[in-house]
Image (cartoon, rainbow, N blue to C red; front, side, top):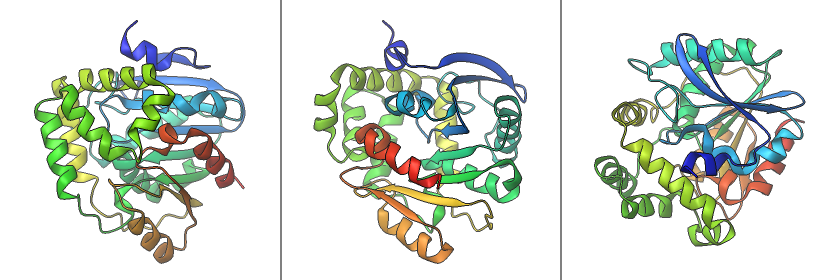
Length: 275
């Protein structure tokens, strides 16, 4: 079984390739209820990394889980700047949602989503910014920069290991819980990292999506964070929550990807954002 197939095995969603604003986009769709769009962060594997929470979320929501242009299995655009992203996301929402959805946007892509919400707030019901560097004056940690560069140059198993050790609060615990899935996650991510347009997209996101968003967002917005996030520290989120007057939800004993590390706690916090 191929690594991506293993990641998605048994999920209650259909995988589709659709044209979204002239971009061939792979989307996982399924479930029933109010629409919920999950946008992955700056990671080579795209939306497949939401798999640990898809079954439970699909019981409550109509899920739309795309691969952002240039990552996962979606086609690349010449440049994933704000204009290109906004046009793509507007078209995706029009095609996939019968009403404004809740949008959960993670990490680097969350910065693009925050700017989208500032200018297209009428298209969203709620916004959850999840481990997003653009909520404040972010500086990429030196150790993370070195790790990311090493992985980009040589996406080996050892370099993926170094990256995962930073992303998770307790990588070994997650591996013990589901070793086959974690192996597929690592294998698929490394395979996509070797694709030239994926590498270009990643470099662009790191260069542009670590900058602070100063635009006003009128959409009801929640900040969601892992307490032990070593990519985007909780202190940045706490400062932003106070400055912006937004609620901050914290998932304990989790790093940058609580939806993988503590999926039940993540789902509980998502439910709380819908109040």
